[in-house]
Length: 631
Image: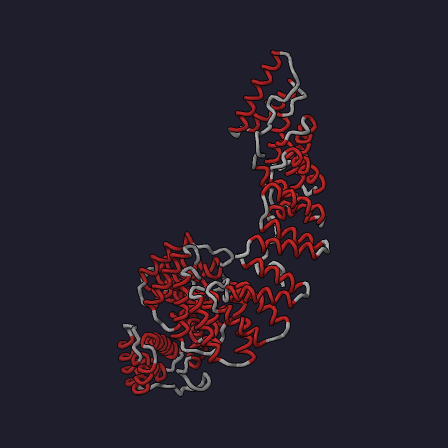
């Protein structure tokens, strides 16, 4: 256990760590020492009157240029001042300040030390150079200069505090205590100083003095029970359990729901393996309104281990989730744990989605929860809700592509192609596709598909080209691009090359096989076209057996009607339309390989499935007449 309770309050200046890591220059470089600044503009040797006038004129001009940001002119003038009076320290100081800003350490130390040699007791110069040495990680030299600065200005509490932390970093706890005592003289007693002194005494193996510091703090603030709990924790650490428990009992008698005391008792019971009492304290902490959010999450994880993993008590686990959320209704971490628990337990989707809405009510910019929720809505084809949730995501994350993707894809499903084009074109310039070329490619693919539906052929092909620029292996784009080239009877060799990539990558995709078959048909490679259209028909369940079989898997009207009732209407319609097109292609291909009767059968099936080819009825009629003549 931590002797200072559950919030570490040892005096640790973050700025010191940054100095020592070389991240930033000291903040003191931006602060003026207390008291009257000693910039020593007049601190130079007595000169003849004319030289004095020249020095003062050029020095003031240099300062004006420096403050106005005209540093090159200022540097020249400061150096000219040095030529007039080599004993003047102020030009050296300003040059050192300039080279500090320029991060030119060698020149900083040259001019800064020169100024300090001319005026060893100038507090401004001491501050500048102490900060510089600390920034350069020359801790010993920095310490020496800070001590000199303290000797000139004993009320400078910032310097004393920094010295205390330097000594702590050096593990010089005796000098750390000396600095803390000096700080206490300036600032008076405080929790921070007392706890730092206690830490130093602990490091010096002087437990009696460490405990005395804690007891003094507790006595100074008798109604602040944190200090009694800190003292109890220190006693626990030093194996004085009886005294520690007595102090905790005193606190809980006065304040039965004292959070720090309950937490210390919880740690104690866990340490002594008293699980029953530890669990009781854990529950009190979990349901305590003031428990820190992170601590509540850690406690809940322990509760999950007990109730779900060890006891396998799902009923208790659900009750605990509800109770904890009631105690901390805006704790997103707990809410997400409940969502995850619902997923693991296979709860109804409505319950899972309700938790996601709850999380978004608490934290609307929670990208993970919004993404999980919109994915669920899309899977359920709740398109209007997808659009609403997507737009909220766009409002919170205007440069992230994912919520735009959901919006555009949904508009496409709803056949609002004009709006899909408008949203895509407006979004593309402002979206962040860094390291996401594949996603950028999909956006252009969707744009091309939308232009296809709007019969804008040239813009469709431009969008497909852009898509393949960012992902040459985008298989969906390759297929659509190739198929539309074949419909336009353009660049058929290019179309064949793209389509071949798709069937090589996904040999079991009937749609890709149909595209490749149709390209071969357009190139008048009819036997090759038949091989691939047969494979497409088999993959879609429209042709049974191997490619030599003509046993067509016909779905009669009654079966289709039953399937339509049991399946999403839009999905069934799209599937039937796709099958109709493939059957139409099959009829054309079979006719060209002189299997007219089979071609007629395929065309009739295509017509039954709602094929939109306006020429299909005429093709059927002409073929029937031809077959009658042949008979």
